[in-house]
Amino acid sequence: MQAYIVRRVLALIPTLFFASLIVFVTVRMIPGDVIDLMLSQNDIGASKMGREQLEQALGLDQPMWLQYGRWVGAILFQGDFGRSLWQNTPVSEQLLQRLPVTFELGLMALIVGLSVAIPIGVYSAIRQDTPGDYVARSFSILMLAVPSFWLGTMVMVFPSIWWGWSPPIQFVPFSKDPWGNLSQMIIPSIILGCALSAITMRLTRTMMLEVLRQDFIRTAWAKGLGERLVVARHALRNALIPVVTLIGLQAPLLIGGAVIMEQIFVIPGMGLLLLDAVSQRDYPVITGVFLIVGVAVMVINLIVDLSYGLLDPKVRYR
Amino acid sequence: MASVAETTVAIPPRRKRGPVLHFIGRLFREKPLGAAGAVVFMLFLFCGIFADALAPYGMNQIAPLNRLKPPSWAFPFGTDNLGRDMLSRCLYGAQLSVIIGFCAAGIATVISVFLGIVSGYLGGKFDLVLQRFVDAWMSFPDLIILIVVVSVVGPGMPQIIVTLGLLLGIAGSRIIRGAVVSVRENMYVHAAQSTGASTFRILWRHILPNVMAPVIVLFTTRVGTVILAESGLSFLGLGVPPPAPTWGGLLSGSGRTFMLQGPWLALAPGLCLTIVVYATNMFGDALRDLLDPRMRGSR
Image (cartoon, rainbow over all chains, first blue to last red; front, side):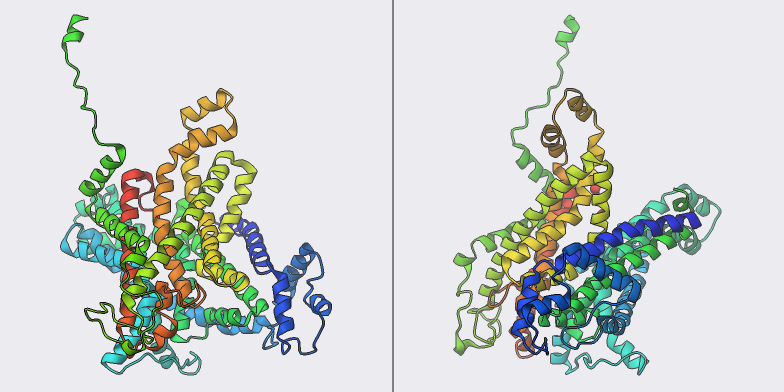
């Protein structure tokens, strides 16, 4: 197991390197524009620096590879993501503030998604080709096509027309009012979880059908075990292993969807931070969010892979 | 020998229909839901291509007297806060979606095929490095990359088409690479290699025709993905700038401000989007099952 963990962590290094390169190159694609924009908005460069001074301050006068080295070095050794062009506060501070909010939203969406998808997937598999199975499958394919931002918009519009009720949009942090915070996050989580549950349900159903046909299941039936025991203890545990990998694969979608939910329901997470930074062209903040989101997805995938190794002994020895 | 001459070998009657018609026949017989998806998809294409002729009113034709009219015979989808006909705007939205969907999915497919074939066939160090790059690329959420790139290059249709094409192209190269790796070891490829055919010739004449099935499937499913991604971006106000009536844009901006007075504003664009994406998914799934059974279950 230890060798597996070491191998898996080492494999992360080249990926991290490429990810940082992607972030760096994408945001620096047109460095001239940033300078022009900063110069045109005098309030940013409060000291009214000239073009060259500004380039020097941002380190843009140096060759690309040196800029990259400095940028990565500052993050790795000092945790320094630079300063926001507008608030002039360290970007790392803002990231630390916003990350838990998005994390909470994602986690709640995951819990909602899984607790809907797995029971329905299992039901659909053990009652294959019954009307219930068809309803569940059609519903899940439909949920894949419904854009979450449309669902979110409708939740904002129709309850308020019919019952005069609208979701709360004044954000309360979890530490101040746990109950108020949860009741506020639950609606976006359900919408976000819906799309996730559609894919998970389909995979759970497919894997259950595959496992239910295997010999050890027949043995379990032959022993005279009840359906509940066969399904829950013998079949489900084996079918769930690929579902765990799916969570890792869905992590980027979940974070991308969180951006939209945060915008609709005004939740101050990473997504809203990014959108605000984009509208203000606050490049250090954009770079920071971009990098952190990528790293977060990689860490989630690392955890998923390691837990996969724990769940399925076959993986470890490959 | 005489007995051989006497036994009539049942030669199957020559198929009169061409391969395309035959395939359409199979689609309708074996995958009715996929065929329905194909029909809706074609209808969407038709609406998009002939939007100018079909739309009863202009794309941005303002009629202050008809502000926020609920759906009626004159305005089947109602009108918005400036009196613009929602049906016409949804039709023009279909046009934009068709253009963006097909262009971006086309670019994405070309990139996927190029990277996938080169990486899968050449293998070795090049493949290893490229795949680590694809790993890194795929760990960024699509929407985040789109937002960041748009923040650098600015919103607009060409930028969005190219960015979406590049984004999905790199991610999709994985699928084509998988197909190439399984085709690479076939006897005819070894035969071509031993006759001294150039690498380009092998890739073009032997590998590419044999991975066409996944390529077609990839293109079809990508059209839906692109339409959904673009509308998400337009919803955030970072897509095609208004007053262009993209479906995502219709659900945000001024549309959103007036939805409480005109809830129909929230319905039509979202329904169009859902139906088209649903149909594309169904069509793509059916194509995958018929053309390329190996890919079943993958998304």
